[in-house]
Image (cartoon, rainbow, N blue to C red; front, side, top):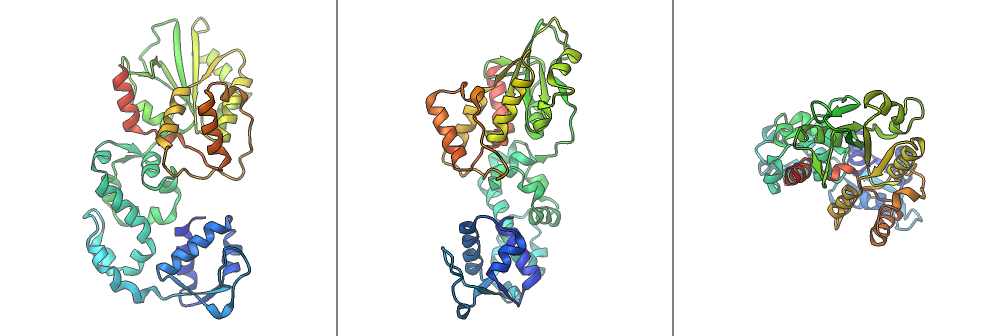
Length: 351
């Protein structure tokens, strides 16, 4: 659940009607009461709802009223005509002028896109995967793919996706050989947790241009989240099947900086004791740097705390404190925070 979905839900189902605050939370199964209060107050500020003060306070802190009136948004259409005309030309301006209620429902997402396009022309010159661009714009790597309002905006504004210079990431092969043929008895293999990052590096790395942080990689493996930790058809079995047993193989793991990502790394090491598996520490340090002074997304409440003994041994004391502060706050850093532009610059600089 997020603010835009709540707004759309109220406008589509209760326009002109009254609704009890507790029923909103109950029907939508909303967690995080304080954030919910912020959403309600934002809806009041946008004149989407108004409190029915005679209903009295709900008895919780922060306090909300027991009932709210969902307003007829059609009365506000004239207020947005000037704003619509000022949108970037890539948007369907005439369409929104003729369908002001649609614009009002999708307004926050439209303005986020519009602001990013206007303020980041240089970023738009470089392509980015959908998840990478999503994190740049919304601070959530899966927002563009999963949010229904976002999908509606992209569908209604047919040139917007091209303007954002995003590329799709079709289901990849499990392994991508960077070089045409292994010409050494020693190879370095990078295991990547998420598909978008795997696909981005696949686009950038090639023969004689595959060095990252001083390590020349010969092969990229898409770990597919927890699939890389399976015991049957394990990484060890894959290694014996795909790579010559006479080769010296070093594996480097890179994933999200969250409890689940840490646990995946720990399990990969534990399940494959005969393989030389290291954490690609330098990329995690770069992620911490990129996240500084930026709002990070919340971890799933289903994630369990992990000790991460092997993981934390890779970092110094200052970095360990920084990571623990992040995790203790219930936040995480997706690996998509490092995007196409970052990798292109790093790889080209190293080669």
